[in-house]
Amino acid sequence: MKTNWNTQNKNIQSANYLKLVEKIYCENNKPTRYNGSIESMLREFFSKTSKKKYTWKRETFKRLLIHLYNQKCYALLRNYDSVNVIHNISAFGNGIVRPIENWKKETVNENDQLNSVIRHCFALYEAPKFLENSFYQSEKKYMLWYVQLGKGKSIKNLSNMPIKPTAKMAHEFRNAPSFLSVNEALRYAQAVGFGASTKTAKMLAFSRLSIIREDQEDFWASVIMFFSKEEDLNVNELDGIVDYLSYKYREDSSFSMKSRTLKALLNQTQEWHRNVYLKEKGDTFSWNSSGIKPLYFEEIVDNKKVVYKTEELLSSAELYDEGNEMQHCVSEYDDDCDEGRCSIFSLRQEVEGKLIKRLVTLEIELPSNVIVQAKAKCNQEPDSKSVELINYWINNSQVRRKKEMEYQRQNQPQVQQQAYARLVERRQMTKNQDYDSALVLKIIFWILYILFRIMMN
Image 1 (cartoon, rainbow, N blue to C red):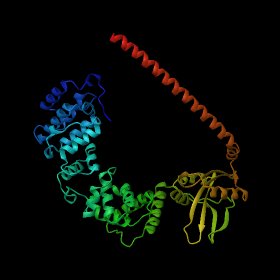
Image 2 (image 1 turned 90 degrees about the horizontal axis):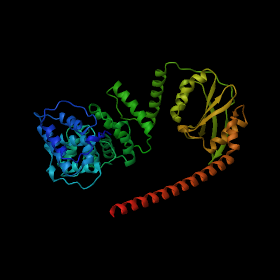
Image 3 (image 1 turned 120 degrees about the vertical axis):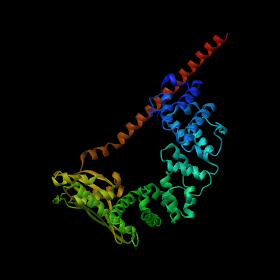
Image 4 (image 1 turned 90 degrees about the vertical axis):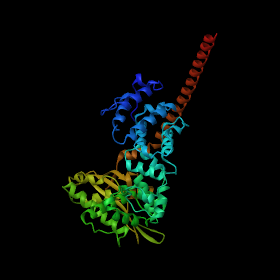
C-alpha cells in the first residue's frame, strides 16, 4: 500500500492542502508519477482527468478532496490507495445521486469512510457489497453496475452482463456472499439458479469456472448446469475437468455436455492430463521389478472380503497416476527408479463391489531394501491400519525399516518429557518477563506523574 512518508508533507491539516488542490486543479497537468509526497500524488491523479472532455470527473475529484478535508479525513487523504478509490468514484461523477457536501464523517476507519462515501454518492437502493468493493480495484464495468443498481436498475439490464440471468439468478446475484468477487458471484448465482446447493454453488464459484469467457458463455452455462446436480465435488478434480473441457471445446466447438456422467468425465480428464504430462516430459521410462516380495493380506469385514496389497510401480505413467491420485510428487521419482536407486510401491485396499483405494505410497531404497518414505494422500502420515500393514509386510518380506525411525520411537517418551520440561521453563520465563515489564511500567508512570506535578507547581 502506497503511503506518504515525506515528513514535510505529513501535516495535511494545514490550510495549504486546500490551496494545493485548487492550484493543481487549475493547471494543465502533465502525466506525473507519485514519488511519496502529497503534491506528486495529487498531480498524478489530476493528470488522469481532462480539462476539455468529461470535465465533471475532474470537478468531482476536487469536490471530494475538499469535502473530505473539511470532514477531517486526513489519514484517508494521505493514503495513495484511498485517494485512488476517490478517483474511481469521480469517474462516475455524473451519476452521483446526493450532494457530495451532505456526507458526514461518522467513523475514524478509512475503509468505512470510503464505503460510506460510495453509498452516499450512488446508492439510492441497496447494492451488493462485492460490487461496492470494485471501487478498490480497476474494472470500471463493475463500478458502473454498482451505480446502475444504486439507481434501481434490474440485474438483467446491467450493461454488458456476460450471462443470461433468470429471475432466480438475479435474486441470488444481488444476495451473493460479500466475500466473493464479481465473477464468482455471477457463477454462484448461476449455479443456485440451476438448482445447486449453497455448498456446490460456492465450490463452482471458487473454481476456474469463475473465469468468464463471454464468447463461449452458452457452453460454460451448460457446464455450470451439469455440475449443479453434483453434491460431492472436489475442487482439484473440478479444476482438472475444467482444463480438459477447455481443451475439448477449443478443439471442437460442437463439443457438448449432453449425455455425460461425472465418472466418465473424471476418467477422460485423468487420461488427458496423463498424456499431456508425458508429452511435456519428453523422456519417459519403464523399468524392471526390484524383486521385492509384495504384501498380500486378507480379512473379512462386514461379511466382505477385504484385500490389502502392495503393487510395484514400473513406469513413468504409473508414477504419474499414483501422484495424481495421492496428490504428491512421486511422479518425479522416475529417474531414480530407472537408474535402480529406489523402488516405489503403492499400498492399496480392494473391497468387493468397490473401487480400489490407494492408501500409502512407499519409497524403498535399493539395494538396501529400506523403507525411506511412507506417505498417505497429500503427504499425510499413514493411519494406524496402514502402519499395521506396513509392519506386517516388513516381518514377512525382505523389506526393512529405517533404523532412525526405530530409535525415535524408542526414545519418544524421553523426548516428550524433555519437551514438557522446556515448555514449563519457557512459561516461567514468560511469567517473569511479564512481571518485570509491569514493574518497569509502574516506575515510569510514577516518574512522569511526579514531573507533571512539579511542572504544574
